[in-house]
Image (cartoon, rainbow, N blue to C red):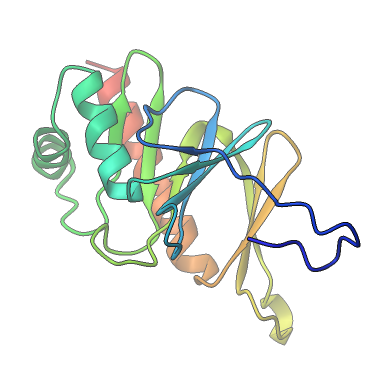
Amino acid sequence: MKNKGNMNNKENVINVLDDYTIQDNVIALLPANSNEYRTIVLTSNEKLYIKLTPLEIIKASCYHNFSSYEGRREAVKYLTNFQNKVPIPVNTSGGIYAFPTKSPTNDDCVWLFYHHIKSIVDNQKGGMKSEFPSTVHFVNNTELPLNISHFSLSHQFYRTAVCKSMFDSR
């Protein structure tokens, strides 16, 4: 990939990883439509490019924590009665809970990590128009504009808090 803005035409090199296990510094998994990588992992201090899809990373990370995505999803559904866009306790002992912004099988689904979210801002409050209806503000003072309603994101955040509370009390 050429950097057209650079006069010396040096190659931009992106280090693409074959796989990845979610750590406590992950703030979001962004889907990517690239030939080289399928996910951009946003951590509290860097961006990583991974060949796996966000859902594949979530599933592999659940296995890494001695469970399956399907098992965790079914447990949350059973305990909370949530049926769609179910929050996933990726690593309960590490306090890592993630929630999808759309159906997890949707190619545009972003996964957000509960413990890194400071606030969710409604960019359309008071009739304001914005390309992105919501912006997620993270505890590391970064932000992520998303094309998802404030209501939907806030609802997912709340459901994840309920899930976390239930697992923490067990």
